[in-house]
Amino acid sequence: MSAKDLSNTSRTNWDALDAMTDEEIDYSDIPPLTEEFFAKATLQLPADQARDLVKLDPDIMAWFESQDVDYKTLINSILRRYIESNSDREMG
Image 1 (tube, rainbow, N blue to C red):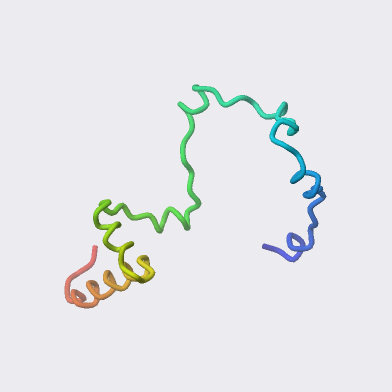
Image 2: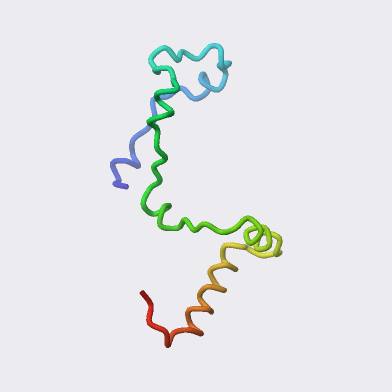
């Protein structure tokens, strides 16, 4: 992010927007979300987020989450210890 980006000030009147009800918001310039739209839609994750995705079985996630620690850090440390204890094996 550049210094220019940080110096830009929003021209949105946030107080006026916060005061509006859903019915008062004009959605006329937004096309309707049709079945065709959803049939063609794909989920796009930023590369840095996609890199961090790992599929774990629900029971494994539940066990890690039930531990009274930051479960993501715990998973990472367990995997690191496994790699270090198997460092004589060739990766890849």
